[in-house]
Image (tube, rainbow, N blue to C red; front, side, top):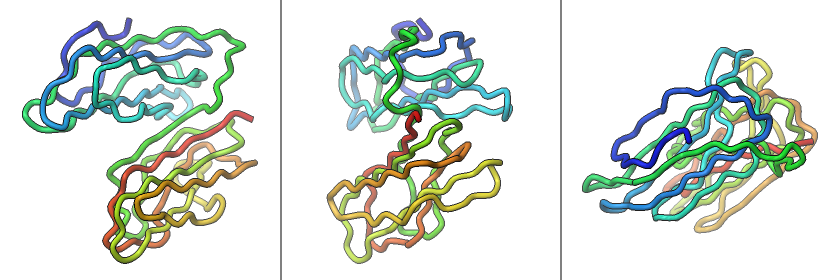
Length: 218
């Protein structure tokens, strides 16, 4: 077990541990929740020796209640793993949880390899971009936009890729958001070490739900 059952009430990043499993899953049992509008976001990161940096490999959907939350099967790319845990809400939001990483069978190949969720992107400002999602080796990527209300102009977002972490290029076509709806686009046959979503046309009076970026195995 990477984190024994305990209460967390402030944002924290765990110390890293060695990652030896080629395929693994992350399980988070949440046994108690308190506070007003409490939220618990968990990001799984691996350390890449190649880039000498921590890379996002999976972000759990936002946790707001007790339950048992399990990632899909993930494919190891780095040498170490850590968990970035972000707490939201008021009146001392607190979650009692544990986090464990377990080996998955080698033949249990993942349906998608990495996932990033952004709930804070400024969609009413042009060229605002999400953080980067590690996608080396993936052949397909997906952008999902879950939008709240839009009073004037619907923002458009575009997937960008990079091979060096500095120079970005466009992948696919711009995706136009729809008020109080979810829209999605998938682009096949890509070759990028990382991807991100960028606001290519700024919205006006738009309220973001969340943006999801995924990469898929060949």
